[in-house]
View 1 (spheres, rainbow over the protein chains, first blue to last red):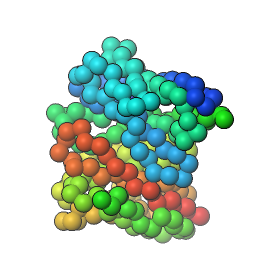
View 2 (cartoon, each protein chain N blue to C red):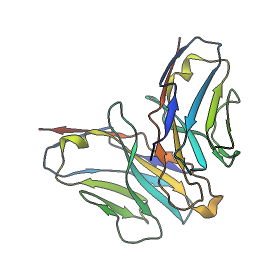
View 3 (spheres, one colour):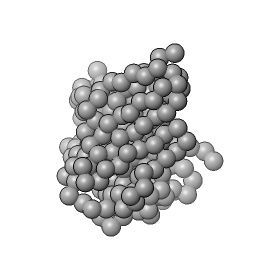
View 4 (cartoon, chains in turn yellow, cyan):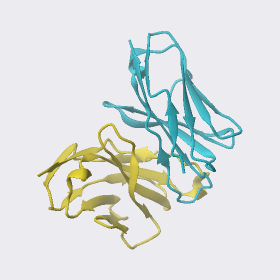
Length: 118
Length: 114
């Protein structure tokens, strides 16, 4: 079974600074997808960024980028120019590829609570 | 386009009762997944339905069940409620074809068991 570990329960960053959230995972599969989701307080979970394991290039979405190290099974999220609206719980998630039965099941880490200080 | 909706948003039940939660996916989405979120266990996968068939199931007791209707709306049922069932129940919908389509989450149903 796949597992996802987020070793930082809480992180804080100053507004406009950069912060990196860590995520490691364990799998025996070679093809899979990785995601970072954001859950603001009392608000809906939204997708921040995704990475296909077969792609060597790291995904980037505006101020959000990942450092995907497949061999090390590491998938960190970098938030640049942090804004107050970035404060939220961030979850790293794993999903098997469509070749593994087509299920949409996500395996989540325990989350990292990010605080942005003005 | 309307997002994923879940009803009710809040629910208080007593131990031993049963409860039914509803999830309406985004129009055109055929896959609905359910997750339980608690402070201790985090987000845990309950089950996934695709085209009215359960496609995957998590490691939860048989008291947790679900179904999906022909319009893709899904319900989950928890029978004989226990205090430990208190949680935020999230559903997520996607096209469900297996490609990397985004899963869209609903706002959740917060269940409190007393």
